[in-house]
Image 1: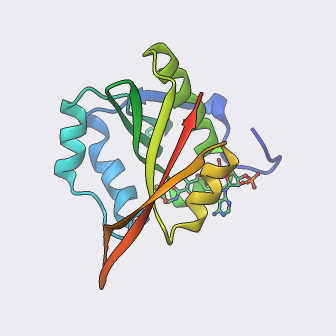
Image 2 (image 1 turned 120 degrees about the vertical axis):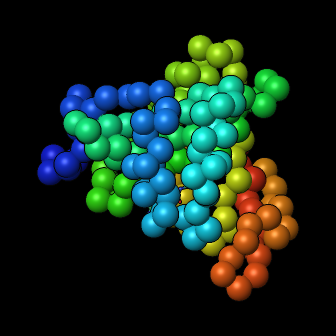
Image 3 (image 1 turned 90 degrees about the vertical axis):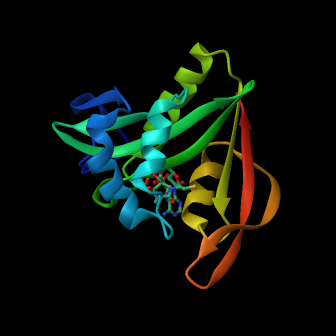
Length: 157
Ligand SMILES: CC(C)(COP(=O)(O)OP(=O)(O)OC[C@H]1O[C@@H](n2cnc3c(N)ncnc32)[C@H](O)[C@@H]1OP(=O)(O)O)[C@@H](O)C(=O)NCCC(=O)NCCS
């Protein structure tokens, strides 16, 4: 995609709807990616719910996942994560493009998300992808020693 020496190439990847088969690998990535990782139970619930969620696989390895669901007429982006060794190679952007295609198919034209105030990397990523800051929600996330605010961002397609 973007860089000549990158490891990630979209044409070697498969996109699969998120299912029980992926939970172990997704959970392993989640554990080191999120300061307060989701439990496996939450991932099982996502599978049960009406969901737009999917994973990206390179051969048998999950290298990224995007968890999103429909809330009324809007898409709620709950979690988008790229395995550490594949970051900054365009995979996050690739997953967002897929999510947007899925949203269009589902007649959804806006996407909302929360991001930790301290997660500057993710905020830069969302800004690059045309998300705008809507508001700030106090004490939304747990931290090791307290709580932290969420920045609410959205994008209209
Ligand atoms: C946020 C995340 C999904 C981005 O995925 P990615 O594959 O690394 O992002 P991309 O390579 O598609 O980046 C696209 C653009 O976003 C911006 N961006 C991405 N990561 C960034 C970083 N760490 N710092 C600053 N800008 C960044 C850049 O503008 C980048 O374009 P460039 O590489 O040409 O400069 C990834 O860093 C991640 O998994 N983080 C941990 C989990 C997380 O925080 N998820 C979000 C929870 S709300």
